[in-house]
Length: 152
Image (cartoon, rainbow, N blue to C red):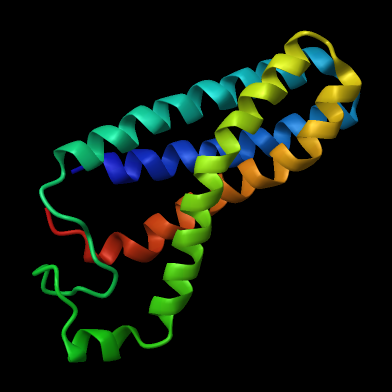
């Protein structure tokens, strides 16, 4: 199935767009800053639709370390991944929690920015930007870490 890769590409692209947006606002190019952020928002929205579709269509969850695809980690599989599993789970859990929490911040940041409520926008984006960037980057990392265990 191609959706996990598409999701990783969308997340990676959003990461780059967020950094480009930061560059443009530091250059005081508000027009490009807005355009890039709107594109990042659209791609993140597309990601959300693709992510939901993937989990709706997927017959079983992918388990990190499950080499044989039976959905159960044997002692041998658990041993093979060793200390990577807790690292993966830490990244995944923080990614999920922050992804759920950042959406209202993104929406409010967009509203404030589009309404040219600059001071309110700046205060909010101090929180929104790093969280959104973390979520997009860790989305790619999670994909790369779990990719060897996909069994379609």
